[in-house]
Amino acid sequence: MQRSNVPTRDRRKDYAEEDRSLRAIQEMIPALAEGQVSGNEGPVDATQPIFTVPFQRNPYFVPRHDILSQIETAVYERGTVVLCGPSGTGKSQIAIEYAYRFRDRFLRANVLWIYAANDNQILRTYGLLTQRCRLPALETCPLNISQILDNWIQREDATSDHEPWLMIWDDLLLGPGAEESCRGKRPLVERSAQALASFHKLLDRSTSRHGALMVTARSLEGWTSIDSDKTHVKVGSFSREQSQQLLRVRRPDTWSEPQSSEVIRFSLNSLDDVPLAITYTIAAIPRYGGLLVTEAVDAIQERDEFGEESVDAELQMLYHPRSWPRSTLKAWNAAFRLLRGHDRQAVDLLSVISLLDSQHIPIFLLATAEARRASVVEAIAAMLRYSLIVVEREPGFLSVHPLIQVFVRCWLKKKGCFLTTARRTLRSTASLFTEGDTKTTEKLTQLIPHTKTVLQHNLGVEESADCADLLHYIAHYEWNLGNTVEAYKYAFHACDFRRRLLGEEADETLASSSLMAVLLRSLG
Image 1 (spheres, rainbow, N blue to C red):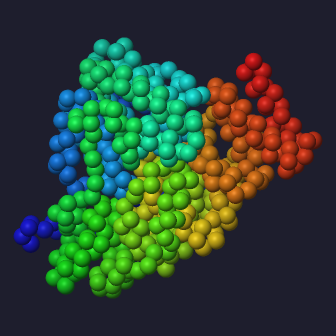
Image 2: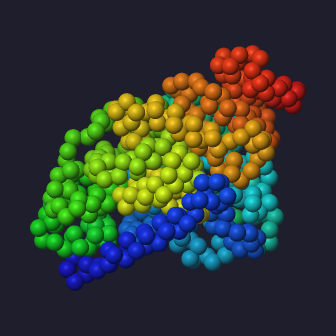
Image 3: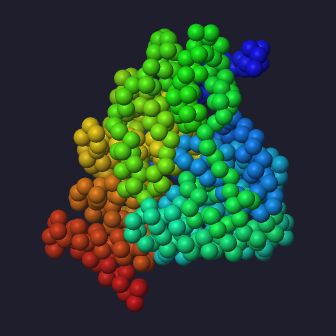
């Protein structure tokens, strides 16, 4: 490509946009810290199309025309497309871009985004849909995830407008591959097998009902029985031209320097043209305080903070596929090393984030974890500038890539700080609950997925009064949702913990025992 075709985007404009976003967050922090901002943008207009994609459109999106063409073909012929590939290859970014293009093409289209990494977030995002349209409650024990699609199709059948719709399931683990990864975690295996059978039944219905189903998945396992030639789209690394295009758009100033271009090409080779790795490298290069790009690239070649086997072990603990681009660890190390050198507060906050769920992270939860509210804004600013987090469309919420969380947890364990950070995160989460929190509120709905994730990390290392308290609060929450079986499970563990930690006659133990008795009567 000729130099005259290189974009001349003013990097100062990017920083100005970042500053405006940060000022908005800073103004919200006092209210967020008190839980006074729910995240809703205002009253819902039922006449407007539904659009629940949680992310802004990526202004730096690099079109992958071959993949987008395959998606169009799959949607046209089957109404279903499955984007498969390792973490960090850009599946979710493609899904986000396609969602916005779909809305641009069909102005009255409903676009539904389901974050499918775990049941907690599936239920939360389904709850967003029930606020906008009348959908029946889900059977949650066990959760049949394909019921969401079935409920939506039945709703469409009952309406007369028959507007186009798109439903996206992001990061769904499905089918036989789950059994090998889960090593005996039967509920997930049974749920996946059940959902796969239901998806088979619903595929033709989605096509005939003006709709499209898109799934992003880290593994092809479980989807191979569906016509792969028509529905599977494999997502891998960028082509070299696409990698260079991303660099030109994000950092035209660096690319235009003659002494840097060859070094950058060498860097792309070492990063295997993986989109996520390139993104972190771009974020790291301008942060070296005037050092040459060569020195920044040298940082990518430095020894990792921990070995790849640590990442594999962490993914196995989470029952996730263990295929991930190794080059993302190199790029993350360079960015994280810089962050540690310049902003320790941001490192501390990122450590807390690594123990939460990866999407829809409430800033009021992070504000509770830090003594100074102003430091939360400063830490968020630093993490944004290193591309380590994303601000969601809904005010007051952040997201982080799951691989970042895995890397940070591996680093914490390597440094011997994991237990301390887990305890601190548990305490700050528990402080947001009170004995009066027995009703299902929007604040609790936002907190519960992260509370369950924090508990998973803590229960693996120790049992504490804070763990028992959170188990008790979750039991109340599930009971109010009508999930009696799930509520009893949490109440039982809360009572068991409190009995061993506090004794049979402690008020807290008696409260959990009383709740168990009520739930048992409900179960018959």
